[in-house]
Image (tube, rainbow, N blue to C red):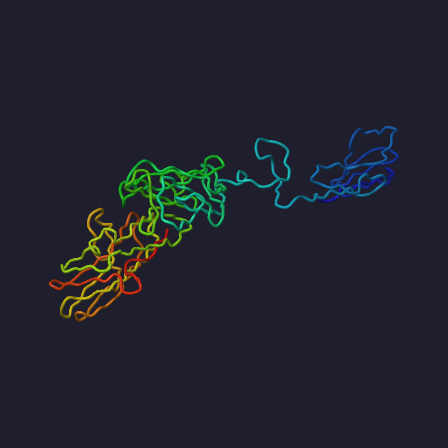
Length: 399
C-alpha cells in the first residue's frame, strides 16, 4: 500500500495545496494540517498549545509490516503486507463472527454451486480389507473398502464434501431375504461414510431410479445417497456369493474383470434330440452374474469337441442368456455369440469354440453353455481330450 508522508516546518512555508494524503506540522504555530492535493485542512483546535511534536509513529494490524516509523523530523511511514504461510486465505472464522485472519480454506467457504472435483476411490466387497477378492466365498456382510485412493465425494445436503474411507471399517449387514436384488448407496453420516440398501422389484426392474446429480449417479429423490453398486442375495437367507460361477456383488466404480470358469467333471456325454439344451443337461453349465448399469462388458468362451455316430452331419454349441425368461429354461443362443459349429464325417473327432462379447442390460443374467444336434444323429460330446485338458466355459465380467 502507498506510504504516508509527513512534513514539518515554519507556518510561513506551509504550501497552499500540498501533496495529496500528506500531513504537515508547523513547528512555530504547533498546528497539524492534512492535504487532499487541492487544499490544506487544519486538524485539531485552531490555536496551538505550547507543546511540540517530536515524533509520529504508525501502528497497523499484524497482517502488515511498518517501516519508517517513527518520523521525528521528516520522512515516510510505509506499510506492507506481512509474509504468510502457503495455502492460506484471509477470511473470517470458520464459525460465528470475529476478526479475520489468514487460515486454510474449508469446504464451508465455497458456495453450494461451486464446482468441486469429485472422486470415488472405493469398491464394494464381501471380504473385509480385500477390495478385489480372488477366492470364492459367501458372506452376510458388505464392506466399503478404499481402492486407488481413500476418498469419496458425497453431497451432505448443503455442500459437496470429500470424506476419508478408512480400510476394514465401513460395513453393512445384508437383509434376511433370499434371491433379492439391492442397490447400494453411500451417504455422509457426520464425517464418516455409511451404506444403505434399496431393493429391486424383481431381477430386472428397479424400484427406485438412478438419477444424475452433482456429477454422479444418485438415488432418485435423495441426492445425498450416491450409487455405488448392486448386489443380490442368494437362496440362503441374508447372504450373497462371489465366485467364479456366481458374481452377485457388482461395482459401478473401479471395475475389475472378474474371472468366470466352469468345467464339467464328465469326460463325455451324448445327445441325439434336435433341440437346444443346457450342456450335459446340467444346470451347473452356466455363469450367474449381476449387472447394475448397462455399461459393463461380458466376455465368455466355450471350447468343446465331439464325435458323430454315423454319416456326414453337423452340430452346434453356443452361449445363451436366459434373462428374458428367468427363472425357467436355458434360453436360446445369444445373437452376439459367434462360432460353435462342428461338421465332419463319423467317426472323426473335431473341436471348436464359440465366443460371446456383449454389454448386458441391468439386472441378473444367466449365461448358459448350450448344445444342439441334428435329428436322428447322435453325437458324443468330448469334454476331456488328453493330459486333463478340459473343454468348458471361461471368461470375465466387469464389476
